[in-house]
Amino acid sequence: MKIAAISDLHVLPDDGDKELLESIKRRVEELAPDVFVIAGDISDHLDILSDALSKLHADSCANLYVAGNHDIWFEEGKSPTSLEKYSKYIGEICNKNDFTHLPDQPFISGTTAFVGSIGWYDYSFRKPELEIPMENYEQKEYQGSVWYDLFKIDWGYSDIEVTDLFNSKLEYDLSILPDNISKIIYVSHHLPFQNITIYKDRLPWDFHSAFMGAQSTGRILENDGRVILSISGHSHIRNKVTCGDLTAMTVPLGYGRPDRSKLDEFVRDAIAVIEITEEGITTPDFVKGDLCEDLSYITSRH
Image 1: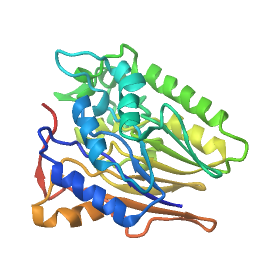
Image 2 (image 1 turned 45 degrees about the horizontal axis):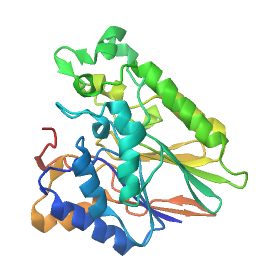
Image 3 (image 1 turned 45 degrees about the vertical axis):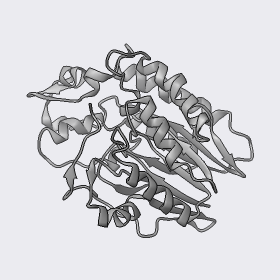
Image 4 (image 1 turned 120 degrees about the vertical axis):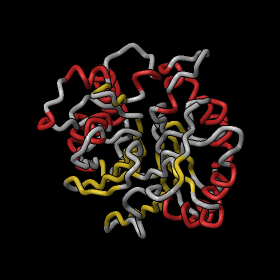
């Protein structure tokens, strides 16, 4: 099985990323994968999300999506809520554009299943040696630096409650897979393993790293025994690690945009190619690090 995977496109409004989306689709169709995975964070605006998915859809393979935290940010002056976006509207948009929203239903190909979740964070990725009080993580603010979910997520649960809720749903999804499933690929936005998180021994970076994911999610995957691969986004630094018999990777594009002449090269680096055979998992030419480190910074936040 061949998988093409990417995340964190952060698509600009008003067709500002039309050429980027076209380049991604061309590259995916050139790769001819069996499955195309997008691990969240296209846009906090539902109309932009829908338009982007319509432009990204690859005709020759299965198209899978999981929502990211930016996708469920509420839109100013509008409903729906974050929970309504996640539990209803994003799934409807995916169906409209022939994508499977994995939090709503697994995707099965032979004896391989794709199971997905937005995932969440419970501060278990925090660095205790920083001695930052727990209340700062709960309030998402430290020394003037703010984790922006504070202002844009409105579902009324604590982060630990949300993590527990999504973990319970993940356990349920794993439990109801057909008996013939021997391999599982987990797709999430937030990270399930702390050792794939990048720390820089400086603030506010390492404070923000506490909001990358939850160790408890990783334990569920490791304990299942069938999960061979985890594909995530959220962290804008690409990484790949091995956790026992399981390969975990992050596949973000990020906020940067290259010159038009270098767009296709940028996209080739951004789309991870994952090949699964009886011998194991390979990721030919996988690019680690921050693809956008030296590029002009753009933001879809508006």
